[in-house]
Length: 232
Image 1 (cartoon, rainbow, N blue to C red):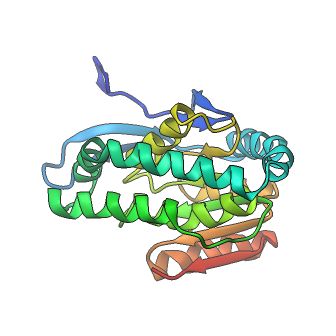
Image 2: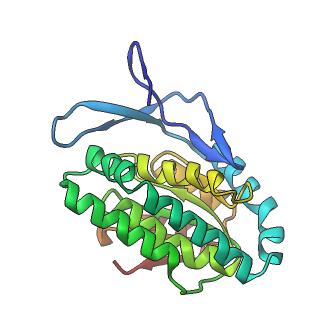
């Protein structure tokens, strides 16, 4: 990752199969918890960016569903294989943003690979996934894979404190030749979650700390969006 002269480079969104740049008024500095150094920054997005991400997911969903489960299983296996090959790279990203050692980071990548290869089947539609900063990559894979296998498309909103591994997985899906629009990523905080609900995702899934999950659930309830808090 490149660094701008005035500080760390902003990590973009991922929409419709490519990096999506947005010019926002506010950014969140992603810091290494071990050193306190700001290593990246993410834009704090809202309703407009959420609408773009959900639009891409909505457009891609019918064809993805028509592919059939065996073809979607092939895509998930290809992504799992690619993630497994890049274990070291993803472990490094996790270590930079979480207070864990190399062994724990590699174990989390292994958990994510296993989740992508699992056979659980969720619900179809357009799914918003919110993930906290703890076990971010594995939490996302565990939430996303059953939905994608069922024929859903996904917009993920990672924690602004730990966005990089999830963003890199979205990039990796393109290298694994996933169709555009299946995985989309929205950066931000609570305004981004409100934007996903306003853009009418079919349901909102949350993986992470229960206390934060209650806050996410309250946002979903206020918008009338079905909400599921996943067990860790």
